[in-house]
Image (cartoon, rainbow, N blue to C red; front, side, top):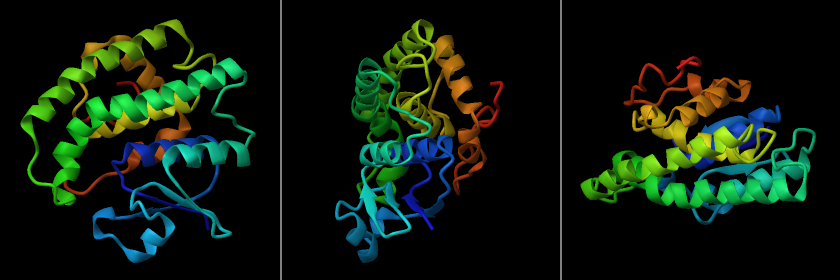
Length: 222
């Protein structure tokens, strides 16, 4: 069986889950408590991070972007990187934006500080980092809103990995109640379209122990 090692609130694992579900690739989810540094998992990924995809033939692929490129090459029927060279370049640019810039400025300051830091034994949350995360969220939502108003989807005419990268980060933050959607209606409408797709169903149905999501989290009409 194809196995995806993940953490429920990892936006990088969520991106891979969305890509695989959009492509209708069957897989089994396994929670990997990375802070335990399990030797068998470190053999699959010496970096000790999730996600890691293990194929039925034993092939193990670490890093969410490497996994998504592999999936697009191995299962090309539902492409997630665009159709033209220009579209593919824009998808890659936006995936890098959300997994790099958005992650550094928003996700790490909110999700990592408030949820993961304690589990990893990194001390108490940094209040100044949390404030910065909330402040940084506004311009990112404005940028998402601008893209959504000027294109059918974030990177162009078709839904792509860029949408799933952005939606993965926002869905994890939305689960913990850290997204103020009233800041940008266009971004909110785009996210509603994303979470209405069938590939989102398992994410919206999943619950994380000790954390209750806001009532709108799984509401497709939100």
